[in-house]
Length: 91
Image: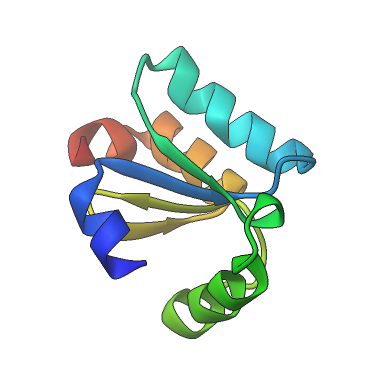
């Protein structure tokens, strides 16, 4: 997780069926910001990754968003960071 979040500008830990994940991806799409989406429900180690994310971030839910290695939070946090300008500043 730490390797991936350090190597990529934006990493979204997601589940393919999650509507909040879709909203977060749409936010970055609208910003024309490339991101790496890791679909936990489509990986054999998805449950282990989600457990590790909980340990790392204290967040159980998806989406779980990192920008430039910094944990942003979920969809609400990402939307708020976009509105406040924090997201653009981090990128």
